[in-house]
Image (cartoon, rainbow, N blue to C red; front, top):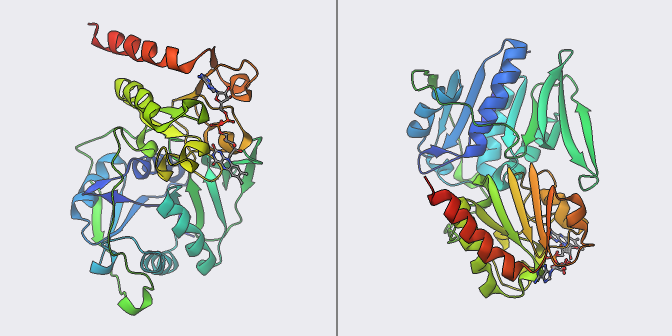
Length: 330
Ligand SMILES: Cc1cc2nc3c(=O)[nH]c(=O)nc-3n(C[C@H](O)[C@H](O)[C@H](O)COP(=O)(O)OP(=O)(O)OC[C@H]3O[C@@H](n4cnc5c(N)ncnc54)[C@H](O)[C@@H]3O)c2cc1C
């Protein structure tokens, strides 16, 4: 069996997404344990710019799988290419990001190959020569350790922000090879007609080290401006619990939790969120949790590293001013 570790790279506008770079860091450690190579697999319509940058982040080799039909993500197109590639040259493990694309793609590829998969991994490592992954279970009440069987490849879908970005080494270059892609348009059952980008005041949740999140306690859509202002001052993103999404105060891509996104930023600041298990399922992996709630018995205050009992409408403006003051002081 090959000891190589593949990273399936997601990219946009010629740049690899942050999660894919994090996976290169994870792959480096696995490849070192097995004396294998780190291979970045880059599907897309045009991949030369992104492929050229991956050596500096730890890839030894890059497979550029270019085809006009891969210009935009489709489940059928990408699953066909990945399945054939992993069947033709099976690595020891293939790493996918736990993004909407990775979560859609990886289980299909695993099913078509008939190999094992672990989703929502918080770590992937080698113990006694065996690949082992950890993942949250029972809405994060427990962390399970899962040993993979010796299939090739094994597939791991890794949550964002579990691995630090590998440092950029500009002098480091990867060998770039073109991966032959044969795709028939008739095999792709969906047509992407348009991609609409959601306009946000702040950076996307998935890229954020700091998330400022609001719940039903925000009382209305206009008050999310308080969260935008604080998130901008901190250089973070704004998220929400489910009620603000259900009420149409914020778009669906803000939602964090069981039916929303799973995030694990360095800091998660929850404002007017009670801490229902369905919300905790999406954010309890955050490194530091701060909660503002006027109810001292709110469950999230029990989980938080730092709890502020009080009225968020009084606290948030003061907090934003304090952050701006600290950031502008020499
Ligand atoms: C199948 C299923 C899936 C679900 N998936 C999700 C999911 O993915 N994500 C999710 O979030 N929820 C999800 N839910 C809903 C979940 O059960 C809770 O209803 C929801 O998380 C509650 O949101 P909240 O904390 O914002 O609201 P509430 O529980 O109503 O809490 C509001 C909080 O704001 C506080 N507050 C009010 N005013 C102020 C003020 N002025 N200052 C400070 N604090 C104040 C209150 O004390 C209270 O604690 C799901 C439910 C089901 C059944």
